[in-house]
Length: 272
Image (cartoon, rainbow, N blue to C red; front, side):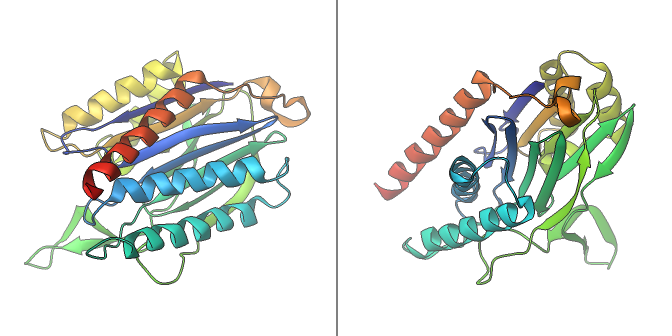
């Protein structure tokens, strides 16, 4: 199984995206969270979301018997901790984040999300599955719809009640399937055909993500958002009864640790 990860700051003052791939035996969890820039400390909300997923994934027996419950538990617990963090600040704040998660085990993929961070399944040079954004279009002063400006209808943190993430039916993996989790900083700046052609035909996968993120940053015309993505290309060892243990990616682990350290530094500066 080939993996790749990228996270760019773009033209923003800081990077509020967090993403990582976690593994345990024959189970693999992909998580991407995009802290909301319109609310303070979105990067903290995203990091809490990532940390909760990692902790619960580590503690839950494998294979996970109810992926749907696992996803809901991750979102509910992260929502609680994010709100507690916001209430502990002076003045009180309301950090928020999106999340998209994919669990690979027993040759199948389970996925869930809240917000507009997306999940894609690419197969045979086509998009087979795609998440539906939890958002509604915004309108300008003349009442015209602005496709580039949409308001989220679901996110983690901020509201009293935890959101109900959308959890989709699992699907069996096939050799050469490509899974993509990405923030809106990537998908909003690229035509879908470019996503398909690059991810299905450029090797290695790390090069494909670099090409896509560079194009998205360029298309942002000096106003690009944070750009983050996780991707996995499946081989026949990870399909059906042939699924094998996934050994992980040391680069993913290192980048995740760096992200976590940056968040701690930011918190210490703010508290000082």
